[in-house]
Image (cartoon, rainbow over all chains, first blue to last red; front, top):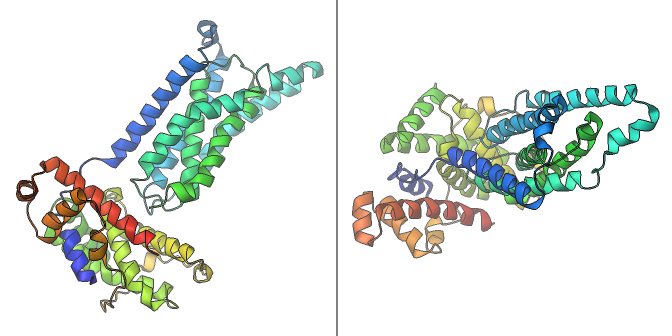
Amino acid sequence: MRTNELINMLATGANLEQTSDPWRRLAYAIGSGALVSSILMVKAIPVNPDITNAIQLAAFWQKLGFAAAIAAVALLMVFRLSRPGVRLGNVLPALMVPILAIWILAGIALVTAEPEARASLFFGNTWKVCPFLITMLATPVFAASFWAMRDLAPTNLRLAGAAAGLLSGAVGAVVYCFHCPEMEAPFIAFWYLLGILIPTVVGGLAGEKMLRW
Amino acid sequence: MSAERLQDLLVRGLDGDSRAYHGFLSELTGYLRSYLMRRLSSLPDDVEDLVQESLLAIHNKRHTYDRTQPLAAWVYAIARYKLVDFLRGRAIRDSLNTPLDEEDSFFATSNTDAAEARQDIMKLLDQLPEKQRMPIIHTKLDGLSVEEAAQKSGMSESALKVGVHRGMKALAALVGERR
């Protein structure tokens, strides 16, 4: 086939295929993923029975803010990385803001605590399950954002996959906040971050194959 | 400036002016060919295939173009992605070792000297299922309107549009797979 014949074909009826807006579909996919993740949390690992007291604590909003801030930056990354020729800009420094903030708070908490209390600040009671439950709650947004991104045009597949994984991990962590009884900054700074990073790494590894177009 | 004129043609094309869109694709082809010839100097026989694959990709992904974005950045990113994908398939990475930032010079040289492509997209069309193939033949090759094509094929207009959309995506995937 000659190239000018292909051009004729592409330009004929040029406007008729635009059946839906893939950007809106990406937004819907992420929103539905977050909803499914919340239902999963309520059904599989119920809401913290003490939640009415928990939400009155500054520490609760601190951990929720940490996860939500990462989710916001990751959302921006997903949208930018899905559009060819758009630079990431200053998102990596922006991503470091919530992480450094929680590390500083964790550092202060550990330094000012009595030496014998430090281990319980770091490990809490649930460190063994926390990263895995966050990863589990990440799967709906992970699958939904990968599905929707295939209709867009990511050109750096590894980074785009990692951004989708980061977003899913951060949304999973936001949802997990409503189950998790832990409030201490050292716990959040390590175990929550680990739970967010597991889907990020998986996303980066899967992106190369699954996001190809 | 050719970049501004091309951008204008694309924007008008996205608004439904198929003649402007045709002009955009035709003129863009020269720049794509020139770019791909520079980067694929050791594989000249593959240039025209990759020109066609890039055109198909640009068409299928045209909804990702933001009208406020410089056209060169968008087109260059897609062409480069298709080039890298192609070279990865062939396990040839050498020619990518020169990290030239060519985005700024993308519209500097054009080559309108078309060689014969090796792949035949028409033949790939035969591999598509009927409900994708017929909508494409009716609307994009015979030039029927959506209403006419819907009548002729007995499909609803929305099913027809979906058929064209999915068919074009399937076609692009087949082109990529064949290598």
